Structure formats: structure tokens, C-alpha cells
Amino acid sequence: MTTDSVSTRRHFEGQVAVVTGAASGIGKALATALVGHGAVVVLADIDAVGAKAVAEALGHHSEAVALDVTDAPAVRRVIEGTAETHGRLDFVFNNAGIGAGGPVEELSLELWDKTIDVDLRSVIYGVAAAYPLMVRQGSGHIVNTASLAGLVPSPLLTPYAAAKAAVVGLSTSLRVEAAAKGVRVSVVCPGPIETPLLNQTNPPGVAGPATPVNARKLLTNALGAPYPPEDLAADVLEGVVENRALIVAPKSARDAWAFFSAHPEEMLEAMAQKAIASRDRRAVRDTDVPEGSGSPGAVTPK
Ligand code: NAD
Image (cartoon, rainbow, N blue to C red; front, side, top):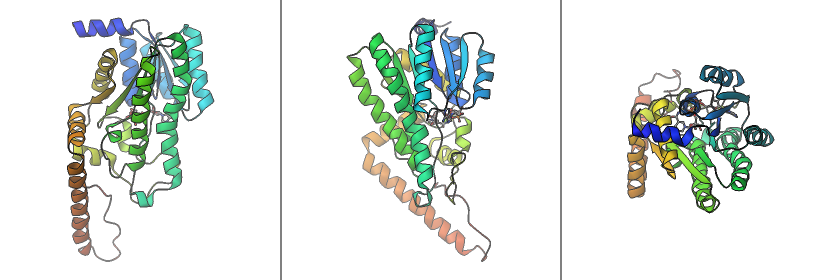
């Protein structure tokens, strides 16, 4: 065991955590790493069967609960119930989320609303339930999963980027307020991570755009191969131990964020030029398509 993993274990051992979206991907990796460091973890997910399977594999330091994070009273019940059962609540990872995108002119209001409900309101509900409780305790750490899309422009993922940017704003503003109350707040902004979310940009049950977006292709073209969720979970827990405000990973995401922060106009202009060039390439290609042979395919600027 390295010195780092010793201090990480010391930080989390015996601590009580709620992780939302813990049945899959990043949430599952976070819950697994937390239990590995000796924490007691409540795995909350709308996928009750998936959360139960993960909790069973993790053993007696974990427990699964069925939770739809868009249901504010249910979020409160899980958060307050965990604090009551264990005598306190040390960590809340507001992590559950969905992907959403497409050309904005093709998006339904239903898709916008669903994205805001699952990717933003859920975080507000988690904060509204956990923060007053942590203020009363005089301790606790809220860790919200946003995205690199909340820090840099993410064309064709506009509803997702809007919700995630709001999560960044919520988290950084609350962090400053919370500091005086003994409560910590961090926001996680990952680049592309190898999870099922990369294959899903239309929330289930919602009418998607006529031109669906291939998020995996879009993000891989821009930022390289997706990062493993287990590596991201290790980065997140390290950032939590260090009480970092923004945990941005992997390196390709930090580079993109640094470039946009230093050169916002240049980056926006370069992205716009790329999109225009891609449209023009498609227009040329379309003139070769025999009449009636259908759409040229998904919009994925190179
Ligand atoms: P994932 O699809 O593997 O996991 C998301 C989990 O959230 C699933 O288990 C799903 O059942 C759960 N969930 C969805 N809607 C829910 C609801 N209403 N109530 C409760 N649970 C719900 O995806 P992931 O990549 O692990 O995503 C986790 C978080 O990371 C999300 O907030 C996502 O936006 C963010 N993120 C992902 C990436 C990526 O490339 N995968 C990049 C940046 C940020």
C-alpha cells in the first residue's frame, strides 16, 4: 500500500456516503473505490436491480436503494434516512445523470426538460436535502458530477452542456458559502469516460431529434479514447481528500479546459470554422447522392 492509498483509506474508513447513479459507470466505480477504502456506502439508482447487484458484490459495507433522483421527496428520504440509520452523513456524491443532444433546431422541449430534471434538478434536490443536515453536523462533503461539457463549449450536446454548466455554478458558489459552515463542496468535470452513457444521447422515453448524435464519436474525435471509470474514481477520491474545488480529469480534459480558459474567442472561432467546413463537406457529398437515397447520416463535426 502506498502512502497515498494509506491517507486515502484514513480519509474514508468508517465514513458514511451516498452515491447516486451507483448501478453503472462512474457511480459504480466510485462506490466500489469508497467501499475499498473502508467507507459504508448507500448505492442509490433508478435501476434498482443493477444497484442491488453492485451492492451484493461489494458486501456488507454497502446497501442498495431504489431512487429516482428527479423525485425530490424521495431524494430527501434517502439522504435523511442514511443519516438517521448511521448517525451522520459524511459524503454525498450527486452523480446520476443522462446524456442528451442533437441539433438544437430539432430538440423537443420534452428533451430539454428531461435533461434539466435528471442532470440539474437532481443535484439541487441532493444539495437541498444534504446541505442543511451537514451544516447542522458542522461537517460533510458534497461532490457533484458535472462534466467537461460544463466548462467548455460542447456543440450538439447543448442541453447537457447547459445543465452541467449550471451544476458547476451551483457547486463553486455553494463551496464558498459552505466553507464558513465546515462543509466542503467539490465538482467533478470528466472528459469522455468509458461508460454506457457514451452510447446514449436520447433519454429513454423522450422523443429524440431526427438527426441523432453519436456522442462516443463526437467526444473521441475531440478528446481521444475514453478514460476508464475506475481511473476516474481514483482521481475523484484523491481530489476529495485534497478538498479540490474542481476535479477535472483525465489530462485531455484539463488541457481543453486550460485552453478554453486562456483563449475563449480563439477556441470558439476554431470550433465554428470546423463545423462550417464539415457542413460544406457534407453538401459536396450530398450532391453525389442519387435522389431518394436518404439522409447522409449523423452530424459529427471532425
Ligand atoms: P452511466 O449511464 O454508466 O450511469 C448513470 C447511472 O445513473 C445509471 O446507473 C442510471 O441508471 C442512473 N440514473 C439515470 N437516471 C436516473 C434517475 N432519474 N435516478 C437515479 N438514477 C438515475 O453513465 P456515467 O457515465 O457513469 O454517468 C455518471 C455521471 O457522470 C453523469 O452525471 C454523467 O453526466 C457524468 N459524466 C459522464 C461522462 C462520460 O463520458 N461517461 C463524462 C462527463 C460526465
